[in-house]
Image (cartoon, rainbow, N blue to C red; front, side, top):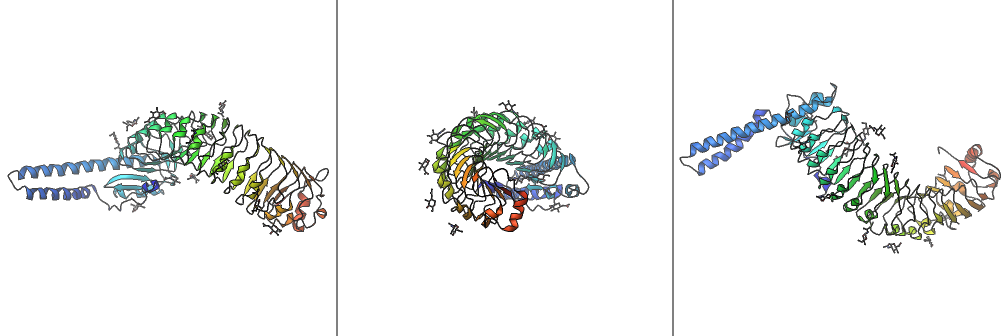
Length: 501
Ligand SMILES: *[C@@H]1O[C@H](CO)[C@@H](O)[C@H](O)[C@H]1NC(C)=O
Ligand SMILES: *[C@@H]1O[C@H](CO)[C@@H](O)[C@H](O)[C@H]1NC(C)=O
Ligand SMILES: *[C@@H]1O[C@H](CO)[C@@H](O)[C@H](O)[C@H]1NC(C)=O
Ligand SMILES: *[C@@H]1O[C@H](CO)[C@@H](O)[C@H](O)[C@H]1NC(C)=O
Ligand SMILES: *[C@@H]1O[C@H](CO)[C@@H](O)[C@H](O)[C@H]1NC(C)=O
Ligand SMILES: *[C@@H]1O[C@H](CO)[C@@H](O)[C@H](O)[C@H]1NC(C)=O
Ligand SMILES: *[C@@H]1O[C@H](CO)[C@@H](O)[C@H](O)[C@H]1NC(C)=O
Ligand SMILES: *[C@@H]1O[C@H](CO)[C@@H](O)[C@H](O)[C@H]1NC(C)=O
Ligand SMILES: *[C@@H]1O[C@H](CO)[C@@H](O)[C@H](O)[C@H]1NC(C)=O
Ligand SMILES: *[C@@H]1O[C@H](CO)[C@@H](O)[C@H](O)[C@H]1NC(C)=O
Ligand SMILES: *[C@@H]1O[C@H](CO)[C@@H](O)[C@H](O)[C@H]1NC(C)=O
Ligand SMILES: CC(=O)N[C@H]1CO[C@H](CO)[C@@H](O)[C@@H]1O
């Protein structure tokens, strides 16, 4: 059974509407039956005592059930009372005192106890009553609305809680450290609010946690080292907060991790390279931080499942590890805006699932390994603003049937733009400006029917940009636009932009 199957969807029992008395009489039947069986077996003088005993049990359990029922009902009413409801809101009419609370919309019961409170997407406003904590059998809470105020720390008494999903609200205040008492928690989502303060160190105690999403809040401070204890954690989202400090080395102990997103914080220091020894990783996003240091040359050796790696907008130095090519499932690789040097490893031509490769704004030199132009899955290649040089291979474009965008501007490329570029028939954007390309322009560029953005400026192409000198290059209907929009200066460098771009 996969962990998703633990979700309570479908477990809502088709509860008939009981009032308190009917509820009790059901339990009386069971108890009395048990009692009668005993009476027949032990037919002796103690019969009266047993009868009284049974009677007392029945009375007590009935009172207890009634009391619990009353508590749960009160807790739900207290929850409702702190919502700002319009008469037209579903809860206003549905949570009627005439009906048993187990039949109320969003409430699921098991044995007359509330096990789930699921009210997502109703645009509910107001605050969360601490009395919710009296629903002690709750297993799932799902409240994605417009709720505000702090999350009550009393929620820590929900010992059976497995799913706590309050993503997408307007909560403020801190994350209650007391949630760490909810030992069974598997999914904890407090994303998309205005939560401040730091991540409670006590969360390291939530040893059953599989998903922790605290992204898109105003969290500050460091990531607690204790979170390295969460050995079952698969999804770890902290992106878009104001967290700082170094990424704790203990993150590498999360050996079940599949998705790790720390994007858009203020993390500094280097990425502990042992993180890249977690072989279950599928998506890793450290982009838009202040991370520095180098990438370990082994990186990629242990990443057979990695599909996406985002390290863009940091201050990472050193070279691109060639072992990354061993991560053969990698399809999105972003190194944009760092301080990487050296060359693109020749082995990158082996990454046959690559879709989007972006190295822009670094200090990478050498040529683009010709194997890269053989990756038929490639959709987008961006290498602008580097020191790349050399010629494009003579069959450039021939093996790129899916290429839609290629940006090579602001490098040191030379040689011709091979006419085989026209084999990349899905091209939408072709940008080679600010290089030292020379020779004639490919005559069949006009065959690229999807082309919308073409920038050839500041090169040494021999053709005049005037359409008469690029015969058959572009259909005349599009040449009209070219004439209007071309930015042609000096020795006629040639720039045209079509359509919406
Ligand atoms: C919830 O439980 C607490 C402590 O037992 C109690 O004081 C409070 O009145 C209860 N709330 C409701 C709404 O019953
Ligand atoms: C409340 O909503 C539930 C679920 O939609 C429904 O089964 C029930 O009949 C409704 N009760 C009332 C009083 O409207
Ligand atoms: C949590 O709530 C959000 C918003 O309603 C929803 O998209 C998501 O599927 C929920 N997650 C779980 C595990 O219930
Ligand atoms: C925190 O949770 C514990 C254990 O459930 C409980 O005893 C305590 O009252 C809670 N503290 C607060 C401030 O709610
Ligand atoms: C979050 O809530 C807003 C407004 O209620 C809604 O537009 C948006 O789709 C929600 N996002 C998610 C992920 O549920
Ligand atoms: C929280 O962050 C958002 C977006 O960064 C910002 O607009 C808002 O002012 C912040 N609120 C607080 C209380 O810091
Ligand atoms: C949790 O992590 C902290 C800090 O890393 C450590 O001191 C502690 O022993 C760990 N606790 C458990 C239960 O593993
Ligand atoms: C980010 O952290 C650095 C220290 O590492 C600090 O100087 C800077 O002010 C922080 N930036 C923001 C936006 O908090
Ligand atoms: C990664 O794992 C390999 C093999 O298991 C080991 O040799 C290496 O030291 C580990 N690297 C780090 C940084 O933990
Ligand atoms: C690219 O593919 C073609 C056709 O399969 C092959 O001839 C050529 O050698 C390949 N180039 C590289 C660098 O792998
Ligand atoms: C490349 O384009 C030429 C001219 O259109 C065509 O003859 C050739 O078959 C194409 N090659 C590939 C591999 O698509
Ligand atoms: C299995 C595999 O792809 N191994 C390669 C890992 O990367 C090194 C260095 O790039 C290659 O030499 C291996 O062949």
